Image 1 (cartoon, rainbow, N blue to C red):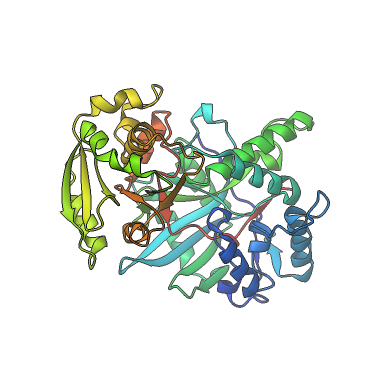
Image 2 (spheres, helix red, strand yellow):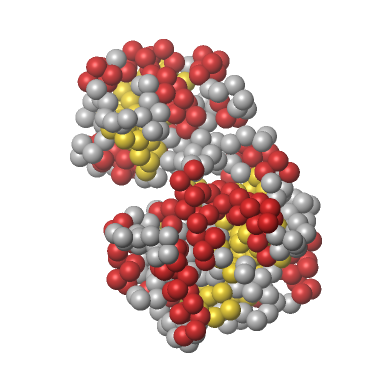
Length: 437
């Protein structure tokens, strides 16, 4: 089903850029203004200038963050800061990192994948999207004509045959290698042997790919493809813009970590907060648990790990010293509040229950409600502390989504609510990228 190919990767020239830590950056969707400022200060060659450049007062059509990115890329290519591989390759990436005191390695490979419309179910989404990030990525595509950061997707390799093909290629000298101050390591190797590339392509030819992170990037690439073909003379599937850069990770990779997306709410009236318990009691059995401020993370993990297949959430904020454990009494009672076109799997997701039953039905909120702030955190301790410090009024702590459930939701043709998953750590931008014109 999926068609993958090698490509002429563009990447930093480590004979000129000695310290990779100074030049790679996070993907655009987690770059805050403060992070952006720090990245600009870190190096004149930091990839943020391409991935998510600064907006300036006085920006106009002929001079803006996109046109500046194009000028910057031209200079880096001319100066040899960025080089383009002469032989098309598939790139293996080992990302070593720490999480909760343990050391992990996530192995992936980066290639280009033929763009397919969602309806073909060749590339399958699992989460909803917003229009604004799509517009930003589309503007960057039109100006820079490059995928600066990859779509992260998942594939099946239960037999380990693809992993076996990679192993010999990770024993040689990497194309890029870097050690980051937070303990992360990045090592990038290239596979140029056509026989090996053909074997990898064959292994993936009969299966779909599942987008984990980068839905906006994929949808922007689709929109760009449609618009280019509406005026281009080339046949479909023949142009360089018919492909998008993807980094693929096996569902079974031990370094595949999916964090939950806890909900945080601010801006609720006292009347709304006072009536919340009565509303919750209609759908959930409630249990108060004294908050252990010295061990919040462990306490939350322990409470949620007692899950026996039922929907179980934690709410914090109504009482400073108490966590409120919510256990859904009967899924049939909340079904009328879930949009009818969603699957049974969707109805049982923690985030679906929080979004549709609690936020929308009981609190009368939407993600764009006036005067209301809805935010997300991937860390239970951070979420609870943000309420303790009065930044938010309520925190809804949910379980992480398992990889198998992502596959099942996508296979059913459904999508989870936006901001349902957080793949940790994020794939950096600037290791290798795809220039399609």
